Length: 455
Image 1 (spheres, rainbow, N blue to C red):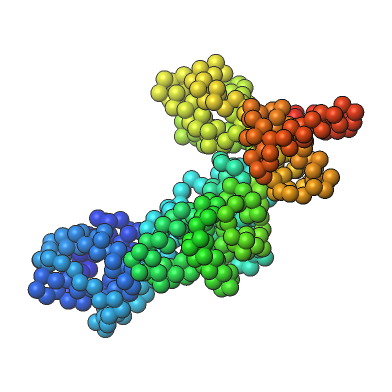
Image 2 (tube, rainbow, N blue to C red; image 1 turned 30 degrees about the horizontal axis):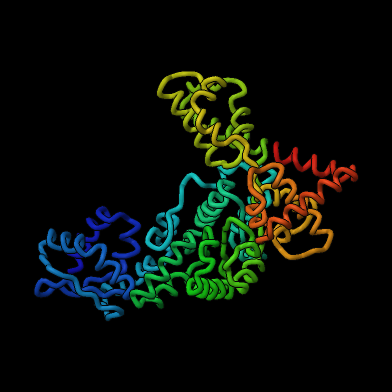
């Protein structure tokens, strides 16, 4: 029987893939083949239910090919295994936990998301907007006592949050091969939690999420307003922190600015290191383009890039690094397929649609962030109720710039400033106009902020 199952397993690993095999099938032990029924000992009901739903047909086919035709599978959760099988499998039961996924593929597609092999520290371009986040990520990836937990990364789309999280996982696993790392989005966390509730496997869920060395949750703002998921996330968070396990979280804004997130979770998240990935600078964008071009040229030495092309792209595409990289990839494809040099004219023609879409559009978020940074106040104060002059005046300046530099209506601007009435925005705009006319220093501040935002 052991020989039959061993031969079937060799085939199943190729059929379902090593990741699925290691996590779901390898923990099983074939205990009996009788009357067309294959009986297995399974460590948890969660595993047996998953195998029955997703891999039963594959197992039936392979057992039949080994000369043991069976019609159905039977699982004995926590059942006694044959002594020989138990001894042979004692070290192999670990793949039922996240470690096997982490070692064989980085992440667990069954619970979370796979890691992108391109997202490493080696190809992350560091500049002033992301140097602190990069340094903190490097420190976490080393393992051992860090001094802050969790590491909370936040910023807009395409600024490198996900890249850094994948890089942490890759580097940490290379240093600690036996470690258990789980990377997933907050949406996946919620989905798995709801699935466990529906299938009455909540204890299996808790075991899987609380027995890891590092938990990484992307886009945590997704669980805002979802009370049951927040409750379980809070307890999972506490359990891991109490065990000294590292947590890495990302979001599109700071914890205090995530509406619908419970105060106790905001407080817990704020206990660690919170790092803002700022919008890219011209120098950082140019560095990213140069790095990508060098990597492509290493594989395609015949690539001809005309002068000024990368500088042009770094200047024109400013809002999103993903779009910037996509534009460069389009130029590479254009050059490879048509065997043409990438000149400035070719770039403008090939990327006309991207350039039109990405002409500099200043958002209210950009304005609020830049003004808060300039006057050294919290971004949350832009939306908050504080009326102290040190907060109210920068808030009015941000309102004024929002009216001057965006096409948003007064009611829209009011909503972005904590739900204020449009008359409040109008008053703020008029106040700054009056003050700037009489206060040279204020006028210079506003001019500087405009230049920074329009750069």
